[in-house]
Amino acid sequence: MNEFYERRKFLVKELKERGIIKSKVVEQSFLSVPREKFVWTDTIEEAYFDVPLPLGHTGQTISAPHMVAMMLEELDLTKGLQVLEIGTGSGYNAALMAHIITDAKRFEGGKIITIERVHELVQFAKRNLDKTSYSKYVEVIEGDGSIGWPPYSEKEYYDRIIITAATPKFPKILVKQLKVNGIILAPIGSMFYQVLTKGTKTENGQIRIKKDVECMFVPLVGENGYHANEIL
Ligand code: SAM
Image (cartoon, rainbow, N blue to C red; front, side, top):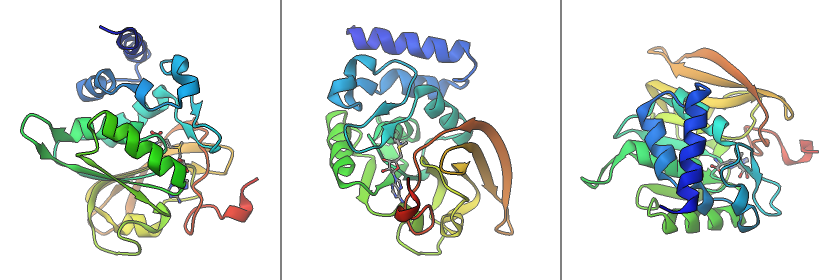
């Protein structure tokens, strides 16, 4: 066993004791996906600290493990789901989700589409997902995820949509792209402070809201998020 695996096991144990990791599937994904392969090289020694880490000089971050675990628990992922993530960052959260929704033994399962607006991070995430063999299940797309994927389409494609950046509201187009009974999750609020918010789509296309913990994410920058000239 390598040293990073020992640190990973310790972090998982701690997150379970704090009641943050609750389900077997989230525990298994955290034990399996090597976070040290998704952080920037100069922070590799901090890979298993429960803190967000900077992704080089891009101004973006890989979220703290406890926040990632909370989001995964809220998403209630199962095998075979179609998932859209807005904000690929390092690719770590996409890899964790891929671990849960695919069945590697049978080479079948769901699919993750993840969108990132920063070119350097698109390249970084693709490399990380290749190195860890999750690229089979994850498609990384460069662009503004706030307009959905395919852009502006109003068809219901996804069982789950996760926005890993602060947004003033759930963008309407993303709600359209969510299937009935599907879940959309995002930190909703101002640019500096948000509440992790879960929406479940009802038969009549409305969203039933459940508010969770307070959090702080980097902003969703795009047509249906914050505009670039608003970012301080
Ligand atoms: N999920 C990531 C991970 O596992 O490393 C962390 C995401 S980081 C907190 C938020 C990311 O959202 C940043 O990489 C940022 O560039 C990206 N982002 C912000 N606005 C976006 C948009 N409109 N479309 C796509 N990505 C966006």
